[in-house]
Length: 429
Ligand code: GAR
Image 1 (spheres, rainbow, N blue to C red):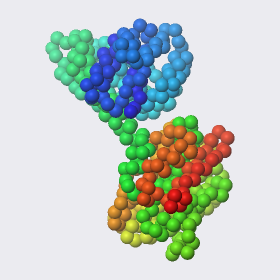
Image 2 (image 1 turned 90 degrees about the vertical axis):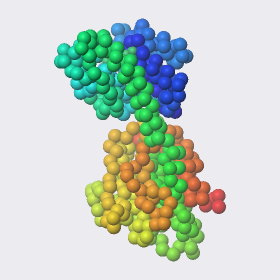
Image 3 (image 1 turned 135 degrees about the vertical axis):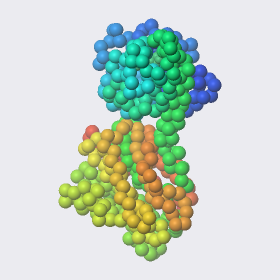
Image 4 (image 1 turned 180 degrees about the vertical axis):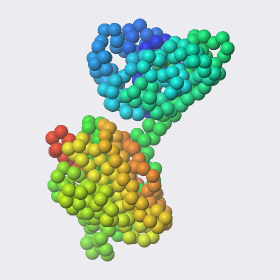
């Protein structure tokens, strides 16, 4: 369930529409858990109170912008808000707030953006300007909030005809009642569904019964860098492994050396560091990347010299990650995969990682013979809890019949200290 905060300045009928949508079962993936107003007297606050929803007034008349925004951020954190909905909220939020909630703030605006929007266009003024221009259509837009007012990506838009004799009031009322009250709850529901899908580590890991080997990089909710590497395997040869750590270096090791026919694709350095650059991979391309780093070159260049694995008919993808620990845990994920007989090289940069979020990439797109390679982009996942807790979440969501080994490294970026959490199935067998 996505925890939603609604920010409203006025009567709050859009807030009411969301609350009603929750009652009728139309809004089910999000729940309004907090209402904030920038005006002490906003009727929107009463609508919340009537439902027993915490309602807080941060009066702009009494608070300077910086204090208002600091108080707002404190509230959003305290209520563990996932999504902020501006429903008739007339204060423009600065980058200080917007940057903390990228793609997590939605606004509704009573015009067809990009017309009649931006600074100064709010409430009645929007409709006055539309009528003055003589437009024949107007409507409402729901969009993501970026640092520029009303300029973020559009999520939904609906139009209606402007009638002869319309006044700003009549046009505002028709847009509000026939469009906004439906469009806002519908869009919030849809967006909450998207957020929920990308948020759930369990859903992401269970999407395929057999993901093969997998890498997760990101930041947990405390802002620590999390790097996970897991092995699931089908064949006995591939299952004959565990992960072992020697300070910061993590390797695969055979459980029974006698059973190893060919170590080249199963025994390798899975995680290591070169000058605070953390490398994680599912094969000996980690050696290639680390040696290129030592020569002052990058991961992309290193991987130009490599291709997917030669294990026909599966041609297992090579997946790799590089984490810049001094750079706030910014990371790149890479996959070398077979596509129409060629090697496709995809590199995914995440230069501004967000607290509580990471990305998962794995080698296979589920079970099959031959095994299909992972397609598309890495999946966005939620990383909540300590490294130990995340290790538990990952392990418990890997199929018991296939899971072999897992390593999670948690790095405290401010001091550089780290902890490794290893789980090997071998103990359970
Ligand atoms: C709505 O029409 C909304 O689109 C508009 O304020 C009204 C609030 O009504 N928002 C803006 O103009 C934002 N730029 P409500 O308080 O009854 O929901």
